[in-house]
Image: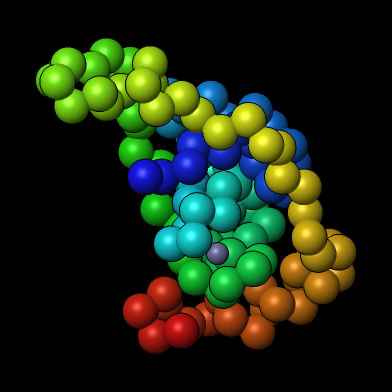
Length: 104
Ligand SMILES: [Zn+2]
Ligand SMILES: [Zn+2]
């Protein structure tokens, strides 16, 4: 199950489960769309992969027997902070951004 992380790991913006601007990489590293577009240029600082919009988990358990939805699977609460310095991220992004995600 996808961990719905509560914040952008770059600018610390809150990203609620229904945030339309949450972006994730394949490892669930989570950023806001603004950081992905203007700072990361679609390069994950950790794995180097691209980002996609994070799916919005439904509030309701539409199939009650399956125990789904936010009431049964609440968002994560552990806030993450950047693991790398801005200079390190800039160098990493510069090395990778010219490659489309399917060629990295
Ligand atoms: Zn951000
Ligand atoms: Zn990643």
